[in-house]
Each structure stands twice: as C-alpha cells, then as structure tokens.
Length: 151
Image (tube, rainbow, N blue to C red):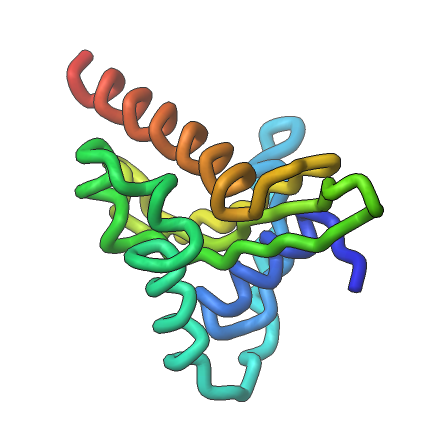
C-alpha cells in the first residue's frame, strides 16, 4: 500500500469526523473564504477503530511520545495510529504516525485537527520516530496558544 502524508491525514480526519473530508489547504484566498463542502457519511461503525486509535496514544506504540506532563491537557483529545514498513535489506524502513486532535484540545482550537508525519530511511518504528515529530509540533502549537492567550 502506498499513501502520501496528506492522504493519511484525510483518512484520520474521516475516522474522526465520521464522513469523507476534503482537505482545505487554505482558509481563504484573495480575501474570499475557501469553499467548505461536507462529504458523505462513511456509513460504518467507527467506535472500535476510534477506541483503538485512542489506545495507541494512551498506552500503545505512540504512548512514549506523549508521556510528558505538557501533554496532560492534549492527551484526552488525541487519537493516532503508527506504522512501520521495512523498505530494504539495510534494516531501514518508512515510518509514520497519523491521527487527529479533537476541537478544544488547544486553547482557541475550534476544529478537529488531522495530521500525518512520514519519515523515510528510519531505523526506528513509527512510534519511536514519527510520533515524536507530531509530539514536537503539538508541543509548539500548545506553547504558541498559551503565549497568545497570555499576551
């Protein structure tokens, strides 16, 4: 299976939203708001999939990346899935972490935020290499949100 990080973020968004999601890369262009069209519902049960993705963050393969106290506020709204695919005889692989953050997990966050990180030529796993990339991004976003709130 081959997928881009954007495609994996769209998958995470669809599972979180329960419907097909069209990514919006711009909120506006030339002063006009980007068009927002909700896609069709997926029509499948997602509760077990969501519970599994919650478990990946809380106690599974990505838990180590989100253990710090700075994630205590974010962790309840964080869902994810790791992946590791060997890509050669040299022991290296392609690793990834995708998921979403529920609205309200960050100060001022009003929408569900889907994400995906992809690392090629890694000797680690998705939980050990790609999840920490997302953790660093979320840590920076949380710090920025707190800075804006404090100013």
